[in-house]
Length: 280
Ligand code: SAM
Image (cartoon, rainbow, N blue to C red; front, side, top):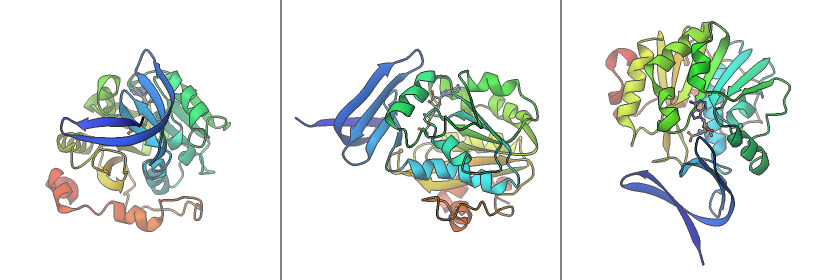
């Protein structure tokens, strides 16, 4: 008998994968966690029925969320990650020797524990001496911080339930306060094909707080529509003008300086989602 998993990504769209084995399933106080071994994409982390990562394409998402801002900030020493309990974003941040401390704020301890057990190549960063993990709500954590971080990365799941506030104006204001005076942040901001209203609202909110706001794109085959957006808010450094050599040539699988520049070149339908003054 064949077993297939379907994530219903929208009321009319889904992704279906043949499952070789269900490696893990549990319900925590926060969500249902599952790890599946799929024929097409290998191991897959699923939260509340939604694909968070697969072993085959996670490198695109994690490199693009972390490497883009870390190559813009000239001296990223203290980095905060909100969400990201699978460890993939932290793995990318810790590739930079300049980074002295990474604080990862994840609401659900079990995501970290399950990831360490079933997807260790993604969760490879948790034993690094520079890592500090806090199991609390990311919004509450950020609202108590002032001028501490060079870079903040929002590795949030879909804006549903406890993650909804990770896409709110109040949260973005908190991030601006938590960053140093030349700080920069990047957030995953969903699909430009199926989350247009969210992208518009988030871009408008962030550009009301940060002097520089830029959206960039990358392909992530297992996310809805396969095209993913990320949004940067920066106090000082322009993503297209401030690009340093991170010394990671030959290490990364997706990111390089050409990809960095290309990712900010937006097709017309995405430009139209963003307000004119932001694009000038
Ligand atoms: N790459 C993923 C995606 O876009 O599908 C996100 C991955 S990561 C697993 C998201 C994590 O955010 C989850 O482990 C979840 O528990 C955590 N999370 C959700 N809401 C949170 C909150 N309010 N504070 C901190 N972490 C939160």
